[in-house]
Amino acid sequence: MTKILITGAKGFIGKNLIAELKNIQQGKAKHATLGSDITLFEFDIDSEPNLLDIYCKEADFVFHLAGINRPKEQSEFMEGNFGFTSQLLDTLKKHNNSCPIMLSSSIQAELDNLYGASKKAGEDLLFKYGKETGANVYVYRFPNVFGKWCRPNYNSAVATFCHNIARDMPIQVNDANAQMTLVYIDDVVQELTRCLTNNPNTVGGYCKVPAEHKINLGEIVDLIHSFKESRKTLKVPDLSSPITKKLYSTYLSYLPEDSFSYPLKMNVDERGSFTEFLKSPDRGQVSINISKPGITKGNHWHHTKNEKFLVVSGNGVIRFRKTDEPSEIIEYHVSGKKLEVLDIPVGYTHNIENLGNDDMVTVMWVNEVFDAQNPDTYFEKV
Image (tube, rainbow, N blue to C red; front, side, top):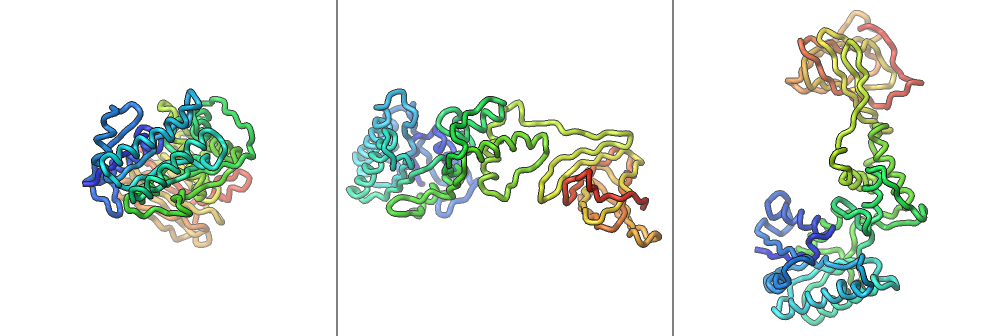
């Protein structure tokens, strides 16, 4: 049994860390050395004070995430970031518990301000405690941490931008060229769990913050606006960029709960419908084709444009003929009961016919976004 104390359990980092530790606890996620036999002691500002004494007596590891960054009074910086750290360490000493302890600090500790000074004081106290007791201590100076469950309009620009832009609310950008250093919450949680194996990444006495991203404030705003517009343009963000991928996931977590869905434009006629779903500058586009019973669509070919068809409902036939071999027709029967992808090679005129009594639904991928000025589509009956 491993007993883990988390202070600041209801905070941004605390909630995400506890969610992952519970995944490990319930066997939904694996850890290098931890089994599922772990107990979590969650402590926050509204917890019963006597619980801290109980938890400090039994803990095998402490994640000290509690802190103050937006106090009503300036004096609360030192009280919350130094005073509570002192109380925590004194309680551990009281029970002769020299278990490892991790401290969440800030890059502000390098700066000359009240918040930074309080964080630096907490760091110094913990390093001293480690020397006195022999306990392993892990100090992280986090930059701007972003991700799901971060409180908007509080102390995270990313959370505020995502929340407000998703709701058509105004945002304020004082300097679009200001560079921010960001770290994603999942990367933070992954690094913190390394501490449980006594194997964090360390540099100069401090633990190394994982996967930092440098990006201008204006770029962040532009990306988040593009995420919102993607519902209209259908353009998928460039997810090969790690920062874009993480920001997009973050943005989606701030969508209003009555706005998870969005409509698509269905091009409907007597044959059925054709609806564009997703577009990408380098991966083409995905569309949904619905054919009425007895309807044949297509009868065209392409020079360079290539497609993949997947019938997911109904049954039919896809026919091919090389444009220079008019007599030979190739047929592939397709059905939603047997999911099978058909490549549509260039140079073959092709069509798709619904042979069933119900609508046939086909997912269609094409390697390029449709360009009305250069459609690369030439009518010719199979």
